[in-house]
Image (cartoon, rainbow, N blue to C red; front, side):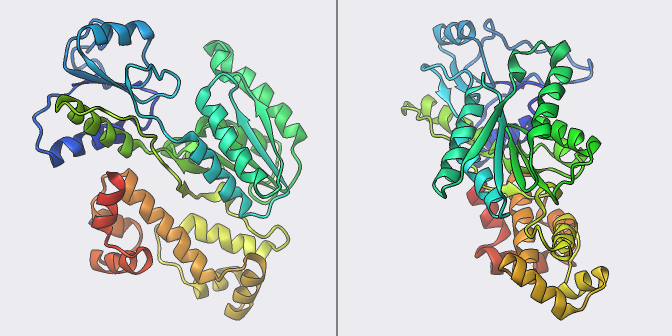
Length: 380
C-alpha cells in the first residue's frame, strides 16, 4: 500500500493513524510504503505514475498518474476535492457541512455582519461558501464573500499578494463582524494584520478558520477557533474502502462529515455590550481545557461577587456560567478523543482531572457514554 500525502498537509499523521487503526482492527497484513519527510536519513521513496503496488492513497494526483495506475490494476483512493477523477475512490470532506458549522458557530455570537474569505479557484472553497451562506440565508441573514486567488498566485508573490487582499478586506470590515476564512493559514494571516491595525478580536470581530491546524491555531493571536477536518475518519474510511475492493465489493464514496468546532479565543465573545461577561468567556475558553475552573474562581479573578457574575452572564448569554464551562470542556474532550492518539490517562491529566476515573465519570455524565466508546464510535 502506497501512501502519498504532501508535507504541507498537517493532518497527514492523523490520516495515517486512521488507516492503521482499520488495519489493526481487522488483523490485516498490509505493508505500507510512504513518503514521509526523513531528514535525508532514509532512501527517498518515489510514489509517482511508475510506482507498482496493490493500492495507493493520495491527496491530489494528476490524470496521467491515475490513468497509469488504473492500467496497472492499482486501486487509488483520493482525498482531495480538487482531483476527484471518476475512476478513483474519492473520499472528500463534506465542505457544505463545514461551512454550515462555521455559520452556526458565528451566529451564536449575535453578530451584525457575516463574511467569508475564500479562493475562487478551489472547489472546496466554493462549497464552504455555499454551506456558510445557505445556513445564514435560512435565518434571513445576508453573508458577504471576498475572493483571494491564492492558488493562482505564484509562490514567490503569494505572501505579499494575500496581504494586500486581506488589508483591503480589513478596511471594509465593520465592528460586530464574524469572518470565516477558507483555512487556518489564511485566517492566521488575517489575524496578524488585524493585530497590526489594532482591530480588537474578539471584542469587535470574531474570526475562525477551517482544518484545526494546531500549529496555525495556537500560534495565532488571539488563538484561532477552527472547524475540524475529519482526518482520522478519512484514513479509516480509505482502508475500509480498499478492503472492500479487495474482497470484490463495490467501493462507495461517502462524504466525510465534520460538524464540530474547536473553540479558542478568536470567537470567545457573546455579549458585545458587557465587558465583564466577555472577560469571563475569555477565561473559560483559554483555561478550562487544562484546569478545573469554578464559577467562584472566575468571579474572584474578575473582582465581582458570585451572584453578580451569575446574573450578568445569564442576562447576556441566556445560559449559566457553569453550563458554559461544561460546554467548552466537553468540546475540547471530544476533540482530544477523536483527533489525537493520546491515552485516556494523558487526556485526563491534560484536562486537569485528578484521576482517569474522575474524567470518565464526567464524560459519561455529560456525553452519555464512556470516553473509550465515544472514541471508538467517532473515529470509525
